[in-house]
Length: 484
Image 1 (cartoon, rainbow, N blue to C red):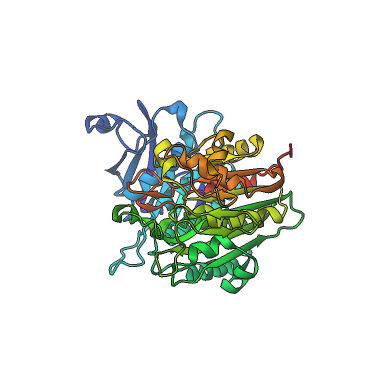
Image 2 (cartoon, rainbow, N blue to C red; image 1 turned 90 degrees about the vertical axis):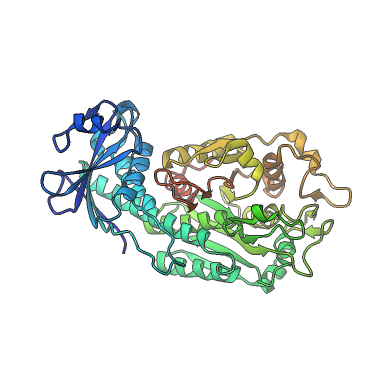
């Protein structure tokens, strides 16, 4: 059942449990004794949640927020995620955390973050559980001021969190279940419900449109590829942004077969496609004022009898020929087609998201996405959106000296370089070849943060839905980048 969220000036009496915040060295109010908590090892560290019996018989959750001067929306989102897991047995919850925001922090952003954290932290994927045991939380009452503006922020947080949870469901679904056809069907259903257009190309249209990268990768699979065109058309838009997402529903590596351990989790290799779809679902619900077009190639990467061989040459949509020297570097091949189409659409700017390289995880770890692009202003706008949304990205360069390493002896390009170093950068440089005429473009390599093997704040094990919050923030706060 969907969670509802409302604003109140004081903690209500008709909720099952209440949550209050504590910062380092201080606990406001008299619901719980600070000395009692300290005696039991509570130091108000971020994400530390303690349940204490209240005088009225209700449970009081004391939520650690860390240093008072550092409490912002990101801290509240993280704390609310931990609170959600502590309060799974309660159907209704009163939350009094906004009062702890540091001076200058936005109450509206804090309110949005609280409901995002509660929904995301309490997320569970139960589709294949015989006894799913869903979380009980149905109603949240957030204490604070701001009236209609803060209530709108709560509603916005619910809409975004709903989209993220839907993407988590897609990423968590096994590849044998979430086939390219089914993912396309899910997109069509989401578009009809939320109010954005989805056009699905089957293999016939994909061939007619000369998407050689997508066709080459799909050759080894019994599942036929799909390509999605997405359109969100508001009245009087401030501009047009193109979103591109990698949709590999399962990645075996193709004939360059992955080791068994490396194949675990490859059902989530469509995390970029999921993020794009989730962003469309959220912005349509929120009524964003920018026109958005989406390009999503979808296929398995398998090892069938006619799979693309190492050394084969594919012709991408824009006419570029690519020698395939590693069939496990397949994401960039299908993105090349999609970026070519995105460029042809002549948007003001392009963003692509892809679980693209393990090299990016080596460089930045499992929580941080690599951010690359050809336009400093647009890259900075994407980075600012990620910061505001509480998702970690870090800029990486696209050094020109690596470009020559992609030259092929028999084709225009090869899909990997001859060195094991700088793999994430080489992939970005490859993609840049398909963004024509200097159009502002940013690339997010989300191989690390798209999936998690631990629990922390609003992050749970499995698919995270990374990128949705960043894209929604980017599109709702959009400023048309200046062409150089």
